[in-house]
Image (cartoon, rainbow, N blue to C red; front, side, top):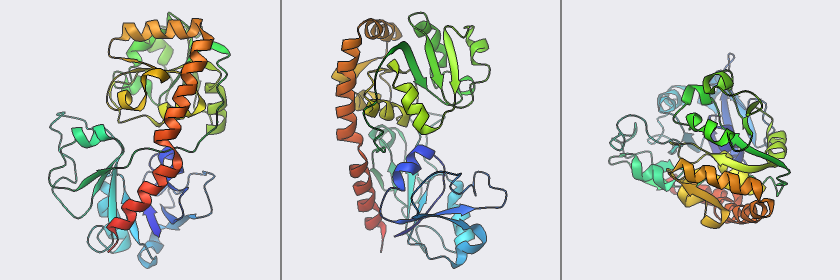
Length: 320
């Protein structure tokens, strides 16, 4: 198939374009959120950038939408309405904002474009009205078992923790930094130490690393901490499990389903999580054992082959 989509979430798109189709990414001279193309990603040759001016003359079998605005953009650029003139699927990556659990989905009042949620929690919590819905769970490219846990430190991967604050559980980090140093990976870390009142000995903002280096560095940390209150399911959590890391996480949204008891510790009481970090820092053998189970669980539920097969099935279903 020739699949038109936008590069919105790098990790998800990296997995999606590993399939057997041809993937078309719109480009604009100025780039930006609607025409960024590959953004330099080392993706397969099946992924091709297409200038927006050429889209109307480009054969497209199916459109994969990820933001409400893309519905009108695709209509203008293709000269065809997704869901009517060309098959389409809308991927809902996020938990709803606003009046939860009464938040109405932007595509709730139509039946032409099915909504594919990335977690069962998302499908449960969004009000999708009469729109058809399904769930295609995440899958990631396996980075391999890299966990060493040689550093008695806690690793966190989060983007924009200062701006997103309570959403990402940033306010909880001082509790964990009192047990062991915390290393934060991700974008938008400026001002994090100042906002938390922690020096760099307690919390180190490492920054946004290339994927290969991120995996190598993260796997050296003893524990993976996921303090996020409100997200569908962070791909960084699944990647950490693939690396073989033990997980300590808030038992919110889909995390309680993704992480089995033998792979880590989940709780809604932060004090229980602080105790878990203390135990894993002090007991490397326990950490390695939990990490092994975490990797097994991630491969079984969030492996790439199942993800691609499920997407093939859905894309085939929406074709006429």
